Image 1: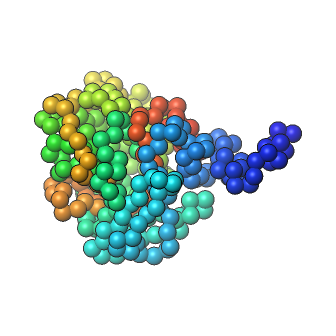
Image 2: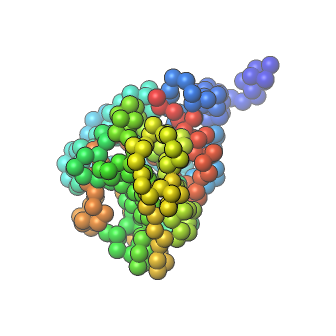
Image 3: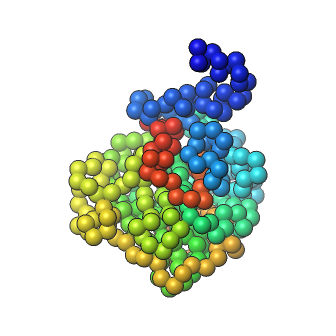
Length: 306
């Protein structure tokens, strides 16, 4: 009866956005997987605080130089491709509901960045959610996103290190705020095609306000966890993480620097010490606040890929 009333009262477009047609709101995240695209005004946690959504959808083939990747909601920031070659491409996602994804081969000069440097500038806090399909890093750290002045005095960046740790840094004027996760297990990483990565920062200079989530729950060393290697000697000192350092000297405005995915432009040299992403990325969502652990779990369950 309830479902009949909903079908009667709401038009089909509204039902699709609410998740009634996609099954998004009924997806427990415990069965065979699906991915559901993020809708800013429907089930997505803290939807009023969403600052950006990019679905990474486009015509299969090379990403064209100077082409735009539209926002996932009206008025949201777009991304612009800056291409030295044809090393970024659209491909059909293996998850049908997600349509396309963008794949890169590690070319540093091919990037996608916010069209305006004022987009996502000086956020009071931050959550970044993304789905990635990539190999476990070997040889070089992999850069996942970047908005900074070459790690000098402003901005932030996030890398997946070859030791298996996740590493986000909020750049301060004298010393960075950072926290590294305990090493992830390469076997666990290889057991899934797609992984859901989330980093949250509460806006303070205290490293305890920075958290990482992998496939729905926080990556903290609390004993037996198949996602971790099981060896993390410093976790007792840093709340279940490998390292932590509070920021010093305050942080400056990052208005003049775009938010960047995949590559690293000429204006960012050796810092941070990471290579451009090799692999695929999809459904990037950014909030201007830190989501709670329960909200991240909700997000994962509704977008579960496998």
